[in-house]
Amino acid sequence: MGVENKVAIITGASRGIGKSIALCLASEGIHIVVNGTNEALLTELTEQVESNGGTCIKVAGDASLPETAEKLVEAALDRFGQIDILVNNAGINMRHSTLETTLEDWKKVIDINLTGTFLLSKAVLPAMIKQGAGKIINISSTASKTPHKNAAPSYGASKAGVNYLTMHLAQEMAKHNIHVNAVSPGPIETDMSKQWTPEYRETVVEKIPLKRIGHTKNVADVVRFLASDEADFITGQTINVNGGTFMN
Image 1 (tube, rainbow, N blue to C red):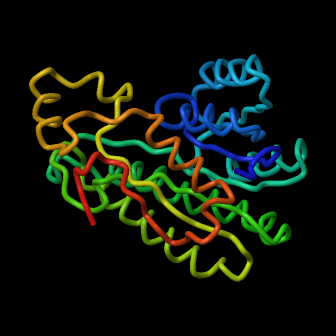
Image 2: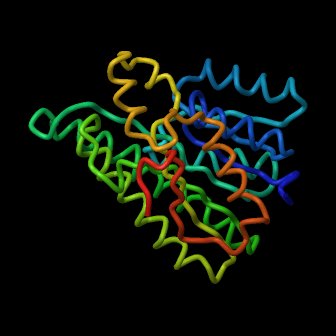
């Protein structure tokens, strides 16, 4: 796949989809730099990667802050001398309705999901431009394309912003051989889905044409493909991984 010995930064990697992506890329021989706010979970992930023969360093911090982006880039360049792949996975959701959503809640979701994606992308671009190559992969959501009553309005809005940012960066950075794509997961088995009631789970599954909830590996496999040489003629795309929940 042409990815061995490349270097990837992955945000929101301590659990769920981000952790699965980290383990998947590490299994391909990619050196990884993982980020999250839970340092204990990041340490566990680092140890797991290294016990399997991979290389992993951790940088704890809030992905919505410029200093975190700077620390991640600095750590990757100091240790490995290059940055080939960025996976913007860090994100949060809230379950508030529009009338229940405070300005503080709105800003928190936008800051982490959208502003964090912008900050990390901007931070890695100088290194990628210098190298003349790079892959940026943003994790979006089906909620960016169709309303979801189980998500706050800020969540879908933030992810729709991620989709646009993906296209804008893809167009702007194509001349530097930097590919920018997004993955849009639907219902996926994570810590969040484990909190669902049996009744709600049944309702969710009933609406999925494939009649099952996806696994984090389903998302990680698409990220691995987009990070590989096999996806070298793909840019500016948002790929659905949702069992047919939303089709376009």
